[in-house]
Amino acid sequence: MNSLISPDDHWVIWTFLVGMAFLSLFLEQKYKFFRKITGAATAICAGMLVSNVGLLPHESASYDIVWKYIVPLVIPLLLIKTDIRAIFKETGRFAGAFHISALGTVIGSFVAVALLFSLIDDLELIGPAMTASYIGGSVNFVSVVSMFNPPKDLINATLVADSGVMIIYFLFLITLPGLYLARRFFPITEKSIETAGTNNSSNNGEYWRPKPIGLLDIGKSLAIAFAIATISVKTSSFFNAPGMPVVVKMFLGQQYLVLTTISVLFPIIFPKVARKIVGNEELGTFFIFIFFVMIGLPASFTQVIREAPVMILFCAIILSVNFLVTFGLGKLFKFELEELVMAAIVTSGGPMNGVAAAISMKWQNLIFPSLMLGIWGYVIGNYIGYLVGLLLQSI
Image (tube, rainbow, N blue to C red; front, side, top):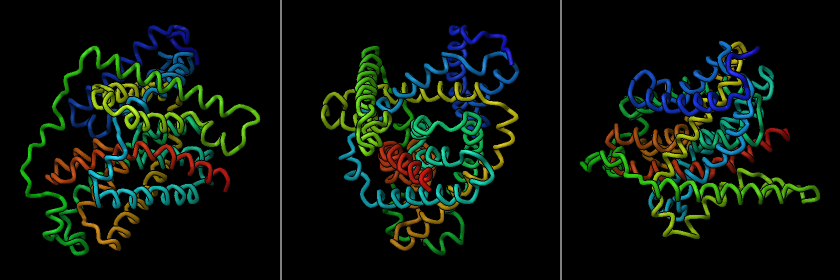
């Protein structure tokens, strides 16, 4: 279908990409309705709408630029301050609950693909991305999607389905501590109160206060991110060359695995520089929203509507298994309900959803660990998603 805007009219296309990314963030923060459906879903649906009514093209070189240059910058921007050595010192026993929940996501992905692969094509290509997303977050989904390249309509159907299922899962997890049946298995004790810090009256406002960001901060964050992305692209291209051993290609030849590794090594090698970086998370998040707008543009409404119901079931199966494994093994290993609720929220929704939930439930001692383990999920999500993808395609 011909569009009103030419595929070569890059100024108009980029104006829409950046403007809609901003508007999606603004609506999510300003209005409860958009907060519930998430800014990501708003951005995707906006992209689908303007292309399906014929305003913007389904294909353009501008979209390729987002895939090739914007997306690779997201990982270093979100990880260049993360010293993974400090994570386990700061999170203690809660880290065990997080990894149990991550295991639940992996098992859930295999179960979901096994049950539904006959109903929809290429499910084994989107499964790895959802595995990574339900361990880390959107940044991992974007990265692993780029590794396995599922059809764009399937990507959109999955993201739309995920938005709806996540709302239900979050609401359920947040209400769980108040349910009588849950407290029969996980009663309130002195240990659970101490673990969550329920009686701690420290100020929560610091987590949402705007941070001062200067021109040099933006320049430094982008310069480091570009340097890491360039090194990663060149390194992965070198090791992906013909004649390289298959095992070397599988890991060192994968751009996003190399990106993750170098990004994590940066704060270890340059700790003083990393500690002074400001604004990188904000830039990385905004770039993700540009991706969400872009990914909606090539999609067909008809195809997404046809595939979304199956993908809702797909996401629901993964999260159901995540819940069963988290709370089943959590009970076996004697974790507190508060730890398990936060582990399930952080793995399925990422660090900021974890922080928001911990603050809303006044579990003071789990706020910072939720943030740290959510970032750890960013780190391991790409590796685990990639391995799950290799296994799914070999079965």
